[in-house]
Length: 148
Image (cartoon, rainbow, N blue to C red; front, side, top):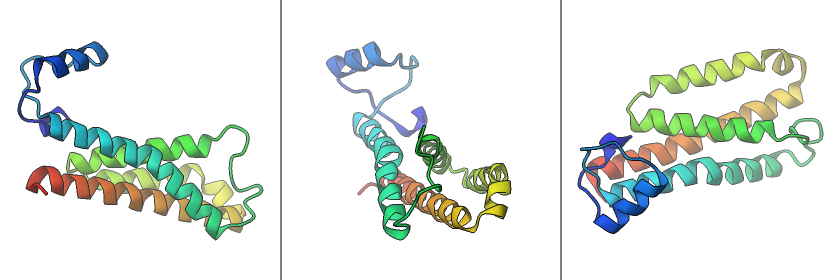
């Protein structure tokens, strides 16, 4: 990720950043690109959670038994999934997205094969999540490499 930034920010900004996150030494920084990547991370992870939840609620009005209501594990899995896809896109490793989708589907295979309602909910949610992360990641990648 540090390879995405180019020139050093001002000293007060760098001091603030170093107090929060220890930056590697001798790497040039571009605050604009750093802000874009940080904004992309927030948009992908948390904006994606809102987007996927609202889309699924509009598609499946009765989600009783489909969603993890007790501990929201599905929400956190989705956030991590979008984060990984975002990083894979920015590092130009798109083949990793297919591996991630396959691995996620294997872990839920038993319930997907037994419950049609859950299978539809799960697959649509996963695809929405992947499309959201790919769209934000590819868009940000184009902006970082080509400018606005």
